[in-house]
Image (cartoon, rainbow, N blue to C red; front, side, top):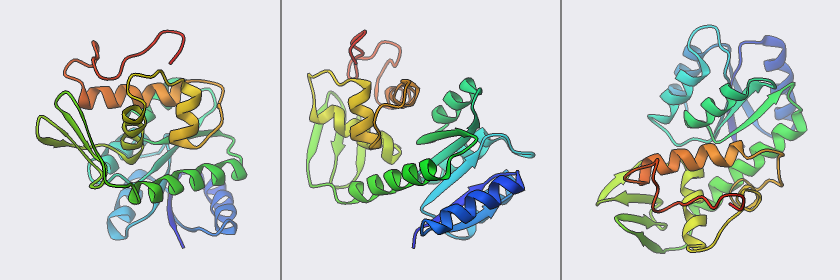
Length: 221
């Protein structure tokens, strides 16, 4: 049974979603604030973290960055529907995906399944190495080197880079990336893809604002 850590200060939301996710077959550990969530994460490993951005002590952004500094565990942030800036900031802090309040339990469960399925696929990647300038992608080890030094990528960033490597010289639309990397059909906006591409550029490009490896084709992909 896969274990989720749900960090949410609203007792009613936390209880309702935890019960719904347990009905979907997950074990759910709960935390009412960021400090409690980080302590729980340290005590026992989890397969995925659900993280509310508005917490009473540490902000969700601080918690996300703290988790990312020590783990590549998948993170889904939960944000108010109107908090576009917060959502983008959460993704750029290292989250893999987002859902908006009010949260639909079935949609959340579907996103969790998709993320965990990608984790398992990541672990089954066939041996293959790709080079892009001074960037080396070692799929069998699940690592990326830049100038011979390993750089930290989340599993979502790693899969995104694999997609670009598999289609070098081709243009991939945001719809295609959503389907291939996240396993979703078009969500209605490009923020999820754009935030991860920005993070990936910061990590692998010499000059992220003038990229040479991951190029945007205006109006296409």
